[in-house]
Image (cartoon, rainbow, N blue to C red; front, side, top):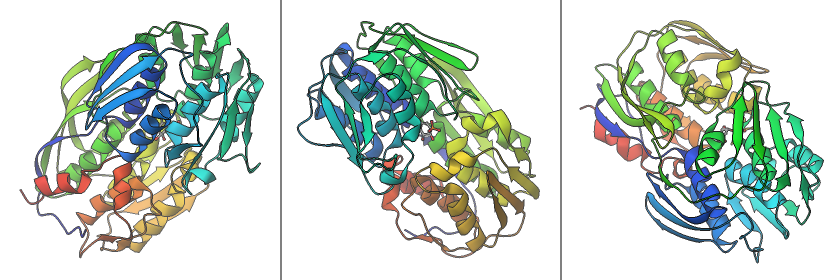
Length: 426
Ligand code: S3P
């Protein structure tokens, strides 16, 4: 695939389902009683990994593209898998399923690809161990492969050192299997899909300020969930519509949950023409259509409590900053180093290769925007968000932007390049 400079981007885009909500729909459906039906499911490799893990534990799941039916077997209905569970490239699968596995009477193990085997799991091993779980890193390096389960859990209160919805959700899911109330306090609030969705399945779960708590042993009941479009996938087209000339895009049916929607605030702070239309609630989540058009952008600071609400969008926000006049400072985002790639390093390398003035820092980056970008071969490090963010940079760069790998987009947005074609030079 080669991306060239766009003269204009115009049209309506339908964004694939939210990845975080799709994972949770499968997991919570599997441990609920009766049928859970998901429409608008993200049919990407990460969510398929979650389906594969629960099938391996005896759950019947029928998937046809974005329509999934899960025949749940209740909190205690999972079966010991006959082989190691394969979590693929998915951090969400790994950390959330670990909370569920910790509460099982059987011992299981899980592993994933090379990237997963480098991602920090000490952050879930520590709290699960405090709950009495048997969980260990098989190579003793605080990473996958992990062995988990076979013990009784007790409830705890945990002060999490990181703002991470994966850590929070892992503990809350383990809390389903513990007697009494389990709670987690985060330094900054992270995405709250677990709290919203589990409550719909019948759990006694609350959040107050920085603390989320859950009461163990509920009866969970299958639900119908209409999964909204993923703002992390919409982000590429939000930025594309703002930075490309003669552009006007309507991005339909996007989840605008405030714990996810930081990119909208940043786009506005940079002077972007962006508006939310047709705001509504779908399956308990706020949803809107997002309208963007070509804008004169200026740099801004992105730091503090907003960071967890846009953590996955920082690579494409960096591309937006490269196209803005003036300086953008991104800080308080050290978590970027432990994503699918070290995104401080991989964003810096690719933006520098395109001619942008960017300096990496310990917890972010400083971007002096406004220099015209030139095409490059993107070094993706097999990170889907790096591939797609730099495809968007390619739409304003002089020359042909190519990729060392483009299959990694399958993780979260299999039709990404097709969607670009539907709006390119229209
Ligand atoms: C996710 C939480 C975030 C995010 C990831 C999905 C989730 O990770 O980066 O893509 O679904 O809970 P952290 O919670 O570890 O920051």
